[in-house]
Amino acid sequence: MERTVAARLAFKTTADTKIALAVAVARNAGYTSLEESLSVTSCGVEMPLTELTDHHGGRFHYMEFTDPAEVLVDYAATVAGTAAPEEPGLMELIRYVRPSRYAESDRLLPTAYAEFGGLQGWELLLAVRNWVYSELRYVSGSSRGTDGAVETLLHRRGVCRDFAHLAIALLRSKNIPARLAAVYAPGLSPMDFHAVAEAHINGAWHVIDPTGLAPRESMLRITAGRDSSDTAFLSTIGGSLVLTDLRVMATVSGDLPEEDPARPVIIR
Image 1 (cartoon, rainbow, N blue to C red):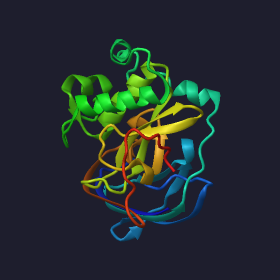
Image 2 (image 1 turned 30 degrees about the vertical axis):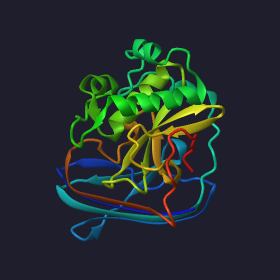
Image 3 (image 1 turned 135 degrees about the vertical axis):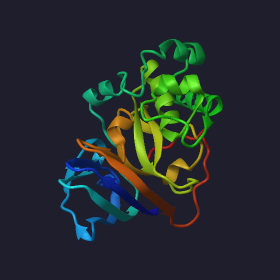
Image 4 (image 1 turned 90 degrees about the vertical axis):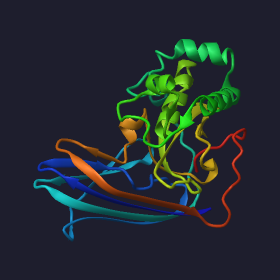
């Protein structure tokens, strides 16, 4: 499988702003090839970047702006082949069964047991996926950056990260390690960065997408973590910024895979 992705971001910063950018495809030894380019310019001048490695092959690019700046980011990558499956350690599985900032599994434990009873394994994953899909409405711009799974359930609407947070919290409530993955998603409409849930069962991380907006088989990982606090495509570490433009592109060679929510899938 060959996938081609790209992202263009434009933003304005205040003075003394430090930024962590997460748009690059995650590194994985299983890919046949990964060709990519990343350019960050301000007033036409290339900015220095520091690449930092995060969990699961994720890469963040760190930059600093002493003075207010207008910044343009251009990223493009072509990836051939499929990623090798991860082999998580025990500490990782413990981390992903705990409550986190946007996935308050401790508060949703009664809901999880009332809705999903004695379900386990893939049957549980599919039941959670279908329940979140049916209970929430996808409404662009309907959620706040501070909303977690509980708030999403109360409002019964959200965007992809809200759907993923609710699924993750419900799975953790049932003692299933679950995490959020930020991905490029060929077939997504409207095109954007996408967020899905992954759960560890039967020795592997299986992906579910409660939005049902894109085929899982062609998704390409950017980052993964406890929730969106670990995976944001653009975050400030001091200072502030205003995003003025965002464009994302993701395609796959040949036809898009047909999506069957009932079929187990691993992000490759």
